[in-house]
Structure formats: C-alpha cells, structure tokens
Amino acid sequence: MTTHSRLDSWLTAPPPADTRDPSYGSGRDSGAAFGRGAAALAWPAAVLLILHRVLVLARAGSVTDDFTTVWSAARRFIDRVPVYDEVYSHVNPHYLYNPGATLLLAPLGLLPSAEAARPCFVALNAVCIIAALAWLTRLSGRRTTDAVFPVALALAFATEAVTNTLVFTNINGILLLALTAFLALFVHGRDVAAGAVLGVAIVVKPMFAPLLLLPLLKLRWGAFVAGVAVPVVLNLVAWPLTPGARDYLDVVVPYLGETRDYANSSLSGLAVYFGMPGWAHAVLAAVLATAVAAAVVGLARWRRSDEWLWLAMSTGVLLAGVCLLSSLGQAYYSMMLFPALFTALHRASPMHGWPAWAGALLCLAPLDWASPLHPLAGQWLNTFLPTAGWAVFIVAVAAWAWAVPTATAMQPAPLEEETRP
Image: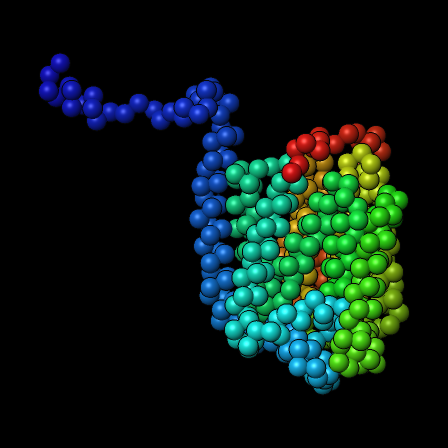
C-alpha cells in the first residue's frame, strides 16, 4: 500500500456506530437515537432557562412583589403585633393567609429582612418545581435519565406560570410539589399521608379544597378525614397565637369574597372589567360549572381501571374550574395543570388531542401581547387569554371523557405499580 493510500484510509472513517444498541443500522434504532438527541438538546436548554429565570429575572424582581407582603406579615407575627394590619382598599398585593398558614410561614419572619429572605425563597421555589417535575416524570412511568425530564424542565421554566412565580416570588412552586406529593401518596395507597399533605396545601391556598372530592369518589376515608382535619387543627392551634386573628374574619374574609378587576383572569374578573350583565355572567358561569361537573363525572369511570389518569386529569379540571369560577384567578395558578399535562405520556389521555393542549397553551404560553400598536387590546389578551384557556381545557376534557367508549375506559392501565417509584 502506498503512502497516499494509507493516508487516505486513515482520513476515511466508517459510519458512526452506537455499541450500546445492537440494532444499529437496522432501522429500529431511530426512536432511541431521537430520544438521545432530544435529551442532548433539552438539558442545556433547561439549565439555561433555569439559570436565567432564577439569577436574572427573579433577582431583578418586578413591580408586583408577592413576597415582601408575606415576609412583613411573618415578621409582625414574630414581633407580636397585629398580622392583618393593612389597608385593603388599594391594588397592591395583600396578606390573605389564614392564621394556620401564618403559623406555617412564620419562620420567614426570623430572617432579618425581606431582601435577605427573598433569594432563599426564590431558590426554594425553583428546587420544588424541579423536584415536582422529576416526581411527575417517574409517576408517568419514565426515568429521569430519559429525554422527558429535561424537556419538561425546559418547557416548564419557559412558561408564564413558572416565570412569574419566581419573579413575583410567591409560594406556588412549593404548592406544586405539595400537589405532586398528594397525587403520588394517593396512588400508592398512603391515604393518611396524602390527606395530610393536601390539608397543608388547603391551609395555604383554599383553592385546593375541591380536591377532597377525589378521595370521596373512591371512599378513601383516611385521605378525606386527614385533608379536613389538618386545616382545622392548624387553625385552632394558630388562632390564639396570631395577633389580631379576629381581623382575618372581619376584614380579610369579606375582601376575599370581592371580585377584583386588577390582573384577575377569572370569569368574575372578566365580567367586572367589561361590565357584563349579571344575567349573562350567571348563565356563562352555570354553563362552565356544568362542564366542570361533566368532566369530573366522565373521568370518574377511570377511577378504578386507570387511577393515575383519573387522578391527574380530575385534579387539573377541578383546579382550572376554581381559577375560572372563583372571585380571583391569576394566570400563574395554571402551573397546577402540570400533572394533567404529563398524562400525554399515557396510553389514553385528553392530552393526545389538540383542544386540551390549546387550552393549556392559552394559560401557560410565555407571550406578552402588549404593543404600542394596540396597547389596550394587548392588555386584554394578557389578562383574559388564561380565562379562555381554562374554559377550553375544561370543555375539551369533558368532551373527551364522554366521547371515549365505556369499554375503553374499563381496560386496565398499562402502568403497573412497580413502574412507579
């Protein structure tokens, strides 16, 4: 062989082979190769988005500051001065947590200032969101080493819900982890623990109270009783310990019943903002409440044959219904739809069709519609696209739940217990 031939042979490589996959070259390896490529793309995207949201956007903060209000109330609790000493006639974020939640949040007041405490709370929320997504990946029958986990991280941290949770520095990331823990414990039959976790979430945000319907539908009394007992006991313990606790009933509860038209994406907020006639609001609310009930009843057919699908989707419908039909619904609450979105990995799910995804995207897409060309219309879209999103999601799930034949609903789920952690 000549020197030229040897050099040419040395400069010519064979096709790349993956020694880990014996089917390489047979055409059966394309799915695995795509998964590895997706993971290779998703991991740096996820890391960049997490760092950007935590170290840049959240660090810079926003005019909307949910954290200072909470820290100040926790500090008042520590200093033994009235906790609910605020003026509730303006639009700034107010402290609205009940005495039981105040007791849980009181350790924040031990930190010397809101400026010192805020970065810790941002980091805690980010860690909780990451942990919840990892847990949901496992509950969906996938490993965290698969492409699903980094893709979920990247998509989640790109959403408006996660971004504003970190920028405004509220407690929603911690609540997402609590919601995921409730689902996981319930699926694995640890009813009392599941109910206790749900009870803690209800103490902090009563919007989770409708989830008590789920253990009732399966007659899981341990979960139901624990979910009711924890908020009651925490508030009984906290009431005498909270300075000015009576103001919660006299001032805060009436305020909570009011519909505020500032950044309020609920149906009531839309009705107040646009001056909708009372009868039209009532009819529309009744129609959407009926859709929520239809979705919950339709999904209940899966409560024994496919518990994870039933639980995750029912949770999404109930929480979307709370956001839509209560006096206050804010877009970042849409983070609580994440468990339902993970059912796209299941063998049957409403998330296999575009209508449910259209609703989810209207709630979660990180798009700012404000423009000098149409400033008012842009403001309307930013505030009320989530309203449409919650409604579309609920109606899509209800339609799917009743369109799927009962025989299909009674098929056993492919995800057996041993595939979940």
